[in-house]
Amino acid sequence: MIKVLLADDHSIVRAGLARIIVESGDMEVMAEAADGRETIDLVQKKVPDVVVLDISMPGLDGLEVADRLLSLHPGLPIIILTMHEEEQYVLRAVEIGVMGYVTKRSAPEQLVAAIRKVYGGSRYLSDEAVEMLALRMASGSQGQSPLDSLSTRELQVLRQLALGQTNREIAASYHISVKTVDTYRFRLLKKLNLRNNAELSLFAIQNHLIEP
Image (cartoon, rainbow, N blue to C red; front, side, top):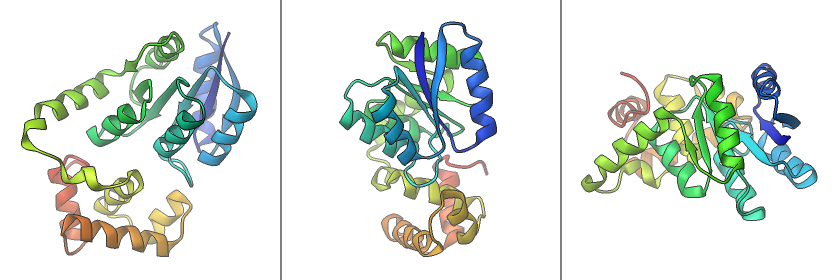
């Protein structure tokens, strides 16, 4: 049996994923985590065969967790399972060394296939992820993207601001303080040479972080 650790901050989502995994017949969910730090602790204690991580979690996000886990356990098969299809997330996951990237709108069979494939030592990218990487490679000749200078959390806050969420709403989503969100917003404006939220929104649309 392939021992899988599930990490997602929504218990209903975890329950659905666990059912899909168990019904495969050759896998079991040996542990579940609701945030990044719990994920790291459980991996240390349980030593799963495969870790399935969401990106948007409280505290440490999925990519930060993946980076730390691979530092502690080089070669650990990790799959990012997320709603984010933006090329920056896919690219960063691959650069970190994540073995799989599956979007939540993919068919359930893709997750099962991804677990089996990364467990066997191969990489698995969903069709959406492959398309995003292809688009990035096609535009590579145009030079470095301004998004490359942003941290994963800055990228997330940028997207939420562009969607019209308030600093308080963003703080609640990521379990951080409003002051911390203010700091991220200030960094974003400075790094991207923008003046206000309206320009942040336009920038996000132009860089395909949100739909117009």
